[in-house]
Length: 101
Ligand SMILES: [Zn+2]
Image (cartoon, rainbow, N blue to C red; front, side, top):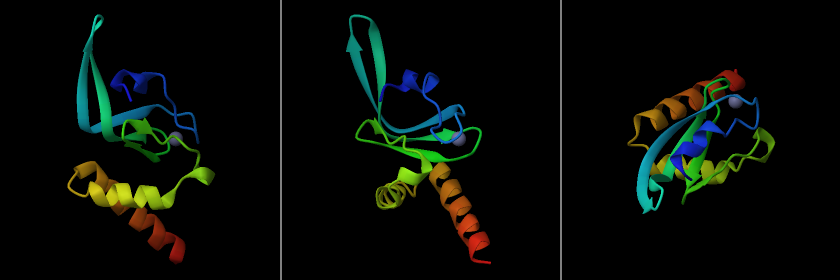
């Protein structure tokens, strides 16, 4: 996805603003200048803290009931070297533990 698109996208769950974390960026030059295309990364909701993966340039912006846990888990596993991913993993672990109590 084009990195400047983040300004017009919103969280499908709460409508909150999204923060972009780009892991893999491709630069494309045309007559209007240079555009940054995010190939891999995440969008994090500033309001409800939900996150969305960007895979092969496509943001997976699905509401909670339609999220694909298998794809998300696979994505997280591929990016455990990123600080933001570790923060997300820790948070999900904490939420899981809370739900089990
Ligand atoms: Zn949200």
